Amino acid sequence: MEFVNRFLGLVAGWNEGMSRSRINFVPINWIMMIVLATVFVGSLTSIQKGMTMNHTPIQTSVQALITDPSLMGKYVTVTGELKPDIAYQYGNKKSDGSFDVDDTWMLMVTPQTVNGIFVKVPNADFDDKKPRQVLVTGTWESMDSNLESEVDKENFKADGLNVNVVNVLNAGAAPPQPGIWVLVMAVSGVLLAAFIVTFLRQYVIFQAQPASGFSSSNVSPAAPPSVIRVTGEFAIEMRDRKRFLNVPTNPTTLENGHLALLSNIDASSRFFGVKTNNRSGVWLVAIVPASIQNVTRGSFYLGGRSFPAIRFRYEDGVNSSRKTVVLSLPTIGEREAVLTELERMTAPAVAL
Image 1 (cartoon, rainbow, N blue to C red):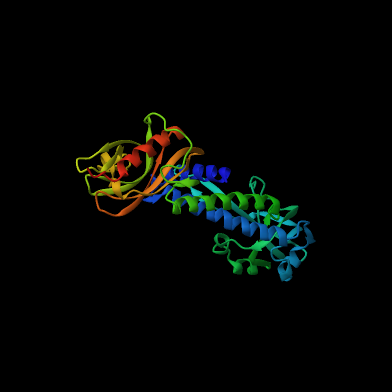
Image 2: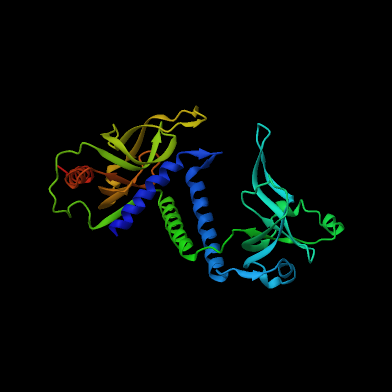
């Protein structure tokens, strides 16, 4: 369980850090989860294809590819005459006027039968436009929409050719290796699950100890802690509210007797480096001491590290709602010192 919590804490740190940055107003952690989901689903598809496709190429002909529907989606080897002078290219035109080619399709024919198919070829060489006899191994699949919109079937009929304009032979495309894609599926699936779990937990990974309450530890309290970090919902100027994760705080007591956890935080929003709203200043968690309940010792995990921590419920001194806060400390002894102070603050007054 310790390893799982440390892993979730590591992912929680990534997740929360990404949530503070946006691309086109979309949080980067959302984009990451979409990417992981896409990879996971894609790997499932590749595993299915790898398990159902033949891994030894079927020796066939252009004629058979055109007439035999059972070859659709198969890994095949075909001999034919490649015609570089009849080709289509798809890509993007760059600012300097040159053309950046993404895909190239050439016509392959068998002159003796006037049958033809298109072959998707990588790194095509157009210096030599002469037809050449070639052996092509690849996957027989549906024609790319970019090519389908360009091919004019009637022109080939006029030239006396019987060209298939529905499918294409993707040269060099071999069946996926299931073993590799199982690994990709496992990694992407675990990361996706961890991102979702930490997102739903608001990036808080806390493992409670069996013993709870104020007086259930055998560890003696240490001196007052040098650093206390807090995870919870803060308020600034009693209006704006925002959750912060494991930020250093300075505890103090307000005039009304409430416990205040103060943190100097700049939570301003920026767009291309320009501040769009000013949310910089002292943020606070206002706690009504007598309302503290469900005090739990435990460990708080973040960024692959664990911290001795305290979790408890309280009444918000600003809007009187019930909330949960987590305090993390450098050592167990310092955690006990904080618990002792909380116990003192929440103890009922003694009547004289």
